[in-house]
Length: 187
Image: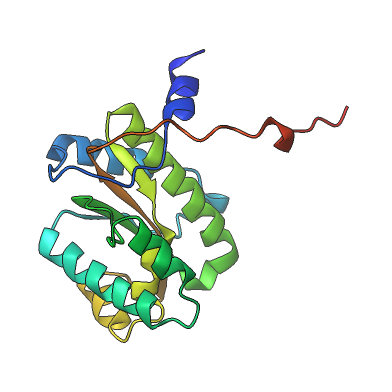
């Protein structure tokens, strides 16, 4: 198996991070890998925002947990509480990917491609990660959505697409067991 296939097979969703920031050059390399992701008609209808400001992340996390707690359906909130009560799992770094809302259909697919590129680049560099869509509550149902969008520098007309948490794993786990039954060939 080549190096790329090994990286894909060993990546897992980390939900327990050390309080140690990855080096700047590693974060730069991950961000550079992200902007190499393909996009529909090369529109690149996304931005890559790397957050290393712990106070800002804590503020966003508190707002996200407040939003989840206020939802009628408590399943997401309860799941996070069962996992330690931290929306960002103690990760010291987060990449937020806002997307151009005028290109919504393309941008959502492209955002997914970009986040997977980030996750694989991070894994290849020894950085644990998890794709974190739940951060979207901060930019959706939160009364502070506009404030956080401005603080992060979302361009005009951009909305939250997804995010990826990055850091060093405090505890590790094996990757999920792939379901081979999901594969079919039409010949």
